[in-house]
Length: 308
Image 1: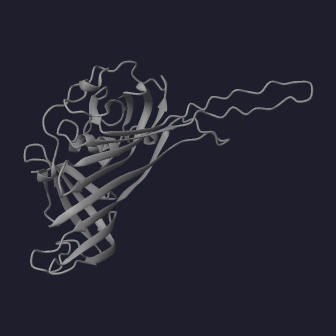
Image 2 (image 1 turned 135 degrees about the vertical axis):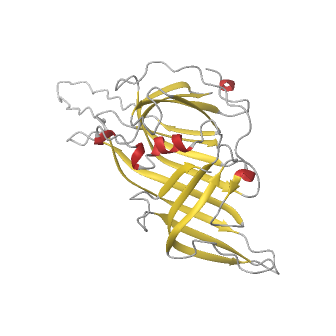
Image 3 (image 1 turned 90 degrees about the vertical axis):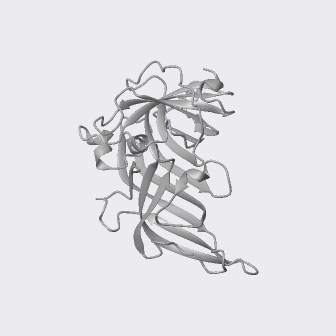
């Protein structure tokens, strides 16, 4: 699998995801493959092999063979219309109840296998994966909108995951750039980052070893941080719609044909003003917690849909 198979840009490598389990009426069909090039990639691959010491005349050591450890993978990719879609984001993170698998509550978010190519380590295969967090960042200065994902997996051919992955489909065309970002709730944004987290954890054996028989999904939440620039005429610029204790704000990513609308239910935790010199006005920094404070989204801190 060549690096250039993922993209026509000089990315580091890429990840191919295949859906193993999960809800299919709203989400992707089983065995759907999604190919994502990445610009940054980190892997915590713990095989947890145990090599018992030899017994001898003076000692017969007792060795406890712990269960296999889980693997954490984090990668960063520019947002691109082929994989940055409202369906994929909801299917990865369980963004609303309609994307949860109600057949078996243990597997309430979709499960995915992954085949990762990276130029030093080559192909690495992981199974029984769940998405822990999706983070989207924006800087008005220039460049692309970036998405970071964190996953937890079991490595190796386990849990009945697919044995083969199709050759990745090449990603071509433009990534989403700062010009593809709009908002109906905030203006004069210099930068922002929204981090949507689902608390997922492997179920352990009773003795505390780390081999997973399943993954339990818990609450979903997150944070939104934002920097807003001053107005052109020295005045202070504050959040247009959510400069209150709680409320909602809208972020729209992408052009009109493929854009994704994220409605964030927020509680403002802090506001800090940095006074600029001269007549430049003041820059505002906001920190928000994500949560269904108003009850409008039935327990979910965000609503992710196709933007009209």
